[in-house]
Image (cartoon, rainbow, N blue to C red):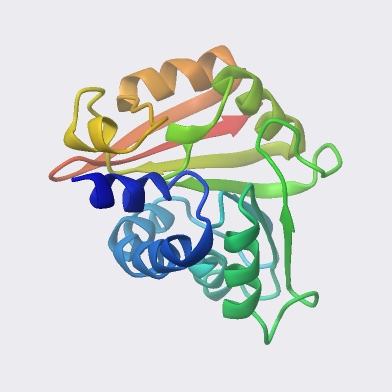
Length: 203
């Protein structure tokens, strides 16, 4: 159990050999959730998009494929994640894909830059979530969308007991947090058994 807990605690900030293994695991296992959730967003060509907590960089690739002529940014708190995401996107790095290390608490982007911001399996680990949501809202264009994709929605799930520092939010809690942060037209979408996508729009 100790080794398993150490491995999955790398979800928050992958480090070292176990972190690299976790990033490969996440790129593969998050695919069904991500592909389903992105279909709900109605992504348009030419968009400028940001994936917060970009992990191993697979979501950046999926965003590119859905928007011809788009530019995609990725940010992650983990140095290991940034290195993996850059490697996965090497052919388009610094051309259509731009990846940096940083936190959702202080996004290094100007106001109103993005048409879409995504957060796949990552809000569990964001400190001061209401403040982070204000940062997301700040960097979105007016009418821009924020899509939160999660698989764990029960605060007392196996995962919250295994992964240190993880906080699960129900879709309804996420909607309330988005509404409180000033997002509008917030939608909740569910896919069994517990996958959810919550989408808010910047007024």
